[in-house]
Length: 68
Image 1 (cartoon, one colour):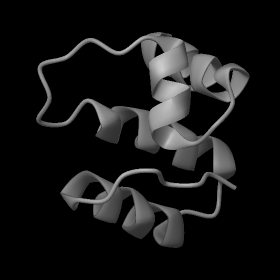
Image 2 (cartoon, rainbow, N blue to C red; image 1 turned 120 degrees about the vertical axis):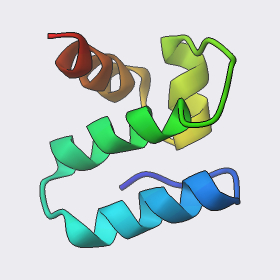
Image 3 (spheres, rainbow, N blue to C red; image 1 turned 180 degrees about the vertical axis):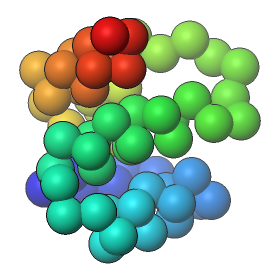
């Protein structure tokens, strides 16, 4: 289960998503998408994994799902 490291509107959306969806893979993909909402920065796998509190493998798989 991810540990949210930041607080704010994006984190609240991620928490809401977590409650609505039972599928963990979908939760991860939506969390990764939410990390890019309203931000101009480019995130790498390592930065995303730290930001979202998930391991690098999970972050990479979520990114792969989004680019497929």
